[in-house]
Image 1: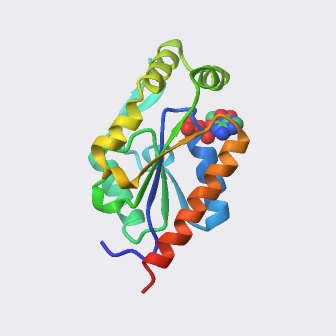
Image 2 (image 1 turned 60 degrees about the vertical axis):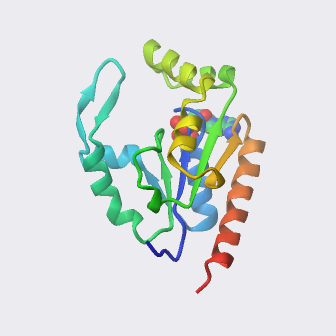
Length: 174
Ligand code: DAT
């Protein structure tokens, strides 16, 4: 798929800072922040609400259909706590954000996550679930791991991704 702008996934355990990074990046670069959560909700790409986890049960086929139109021309920053469902051909860069578990605990507690979801997400971060998923789903050379423990780190991350975008534009200039 030829694109005039790249598609970037920002992924990681809930609470790691995906939305915050995507918003900052969208503002800085003009790329479009695609909140997959929002699309699942707005376009009803789900099979109902899971009470225990307080989250939607995602219908991945519906979600991909809903996303394809947005993503096909490029220029999207996809914000989602999974990355293995997107076709490889859609994606130019996969950023996996990581955070210390104590910091994650504080962020998810502040969000009033139910206990089972809190523990599961902290375990997932410690076990590097998202990092492994990214490595299993995409070529090694497009997967980048960045830490998101502080706003200084976030600023550095946004700078790095913006620099990557600048290089991509040069490399893919018509
Ligand atoms: P996600 O979209 O991955 O669930 P978020 O962007 O909503 O995460 O961030 C969760 C909370 O943590 C939010 O209150 C902002 C804060 N946060 C995220 N990344 C941060 C960072 N690098 N430094 C300081 N606070 C951060």
